[in-house]
Length: 87
Image (cartoon, rainbow, N blue to C red; front, side, top):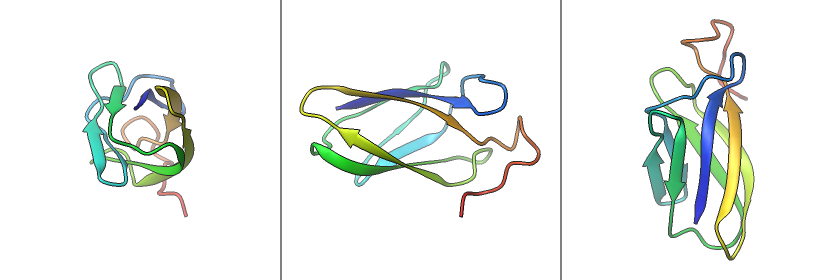
């Protein structure tokens, strides 16, 4: 299982309503920016995030045998007008 939170990289504010996915596992971040993904095999994986206000972004994560935690600061166009999708 992978649990974590999403925050704006400029302001640090939590980002609710963002789709978070690793492979076929996906979730939507809650009002406090937290999310929980289950059914992920241990090892290295690519975590993708996106929403209307968050351009698609990808992060490399390591998922362990027990619950792994990741806290990400992502680019949000709502709070950062210079935000552009990662290349």
